[in-house]
Length: 131
Image (cartoon, rainbow, N blue to C red; front, top):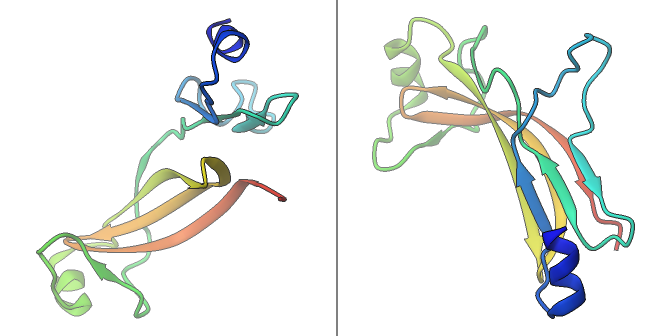
């Protein structure tokens, strides 16, 4: 109702609504919730950022060369791997790309973190603007 009132009475544009209510997987175990919905006039993108669990233990140790240091605590991948007993953690993020005030892309992104090193290990595009 508040968004409808804004549209009708002002020139304020609200291109994105983000919330984190309800888990991604349906309670019945039969599939996943719809994580992104665009309104009927394609002006607002609604994003459910709830991913549970948000942090998981990684099964694989660090591999590859695309690791990046976090903050000022950079260390070689080998040192980060030696510091970790396992593969660290994998953390979920919902990333939103906004270009010229319009939602360009929404992605569920998983990042593996070991000590002060991080690497994107999976990304699923949930929404992409076709314009």
